[in-house]
Picture (cartoon, rainbow, N blue to C red):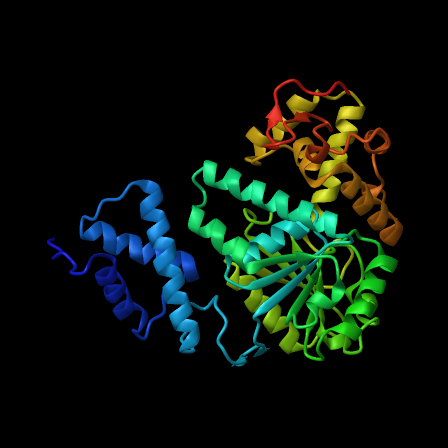
Length: 389
């Protein structure tokens, strides 16, 4: 099949893509879908670029089109928000323009990167300005790693950093449409944060937490409008994991849930509706598996390498249970287990003694370079020689 060349270089490509965007059927996949269509147009017309130039031009043109479509209240894909609130079958999807993330650790930084990459203005808050700047440095370093792996372009990095603001003062989030608390699973800490946020933010602000173990309903009691509270349980690594559990509390409204679900879709992720329960779905199911793997190691059933190899080859797991525990963070995992054991009293959630030993010794996993295995602190890659256990 012959495709006549487009006149006007990239301007001609933009013109051609414009015809596609203004048809009745929207492009799927948001920015990714636009880039895919651009790629198709460019290749069909036999335009050749070096990889970096090619992807950079695609990203820049895609950003231009998204900006034009938002200004004209056009729907680029089902994942992008309209300029106005939208009624859906499940409830009213409220307008989301600004995201606030409280906590700049691994989870918070990942969420902030994902939202900024999706084109949303993002404010990342840490306890001190020094910690906020460290979070920004960590995000920048991770973006550079993604570029080195050809998983991201310089244009996408610029998009993230342009949309991202860091700071240490809670009043910076006063205009946020959605606030996400990515702080430790400490009920008193999160309750205090939400009480402060309730006084600072607008009445229609939606509040959420990434916790997989704390009660959404109990946390909502700290708000003036508890129906505006829900759980958004992201999983690490945020940029790679496609799932987010959207958790309803007892008083979560349909509008709040619908907006949360649409927000997750805007990031290119799949949402699953869950009702409040300790551990929700993923934490509740994965914790006993990881705990049992630790008991198998403690009892001398097999070595750490062989336990992980058995699960990877036998059940097609991308990483074994002990390495997965290291990547979650052994201190975080211990907190999950202790909370679930306290809530349910079931022995399957009782932490393995070796897990407590590793946490006391500060062998916390990938973030410190040592856990059940050893890791490179900069890249997070596993080092072949394992830590003696």
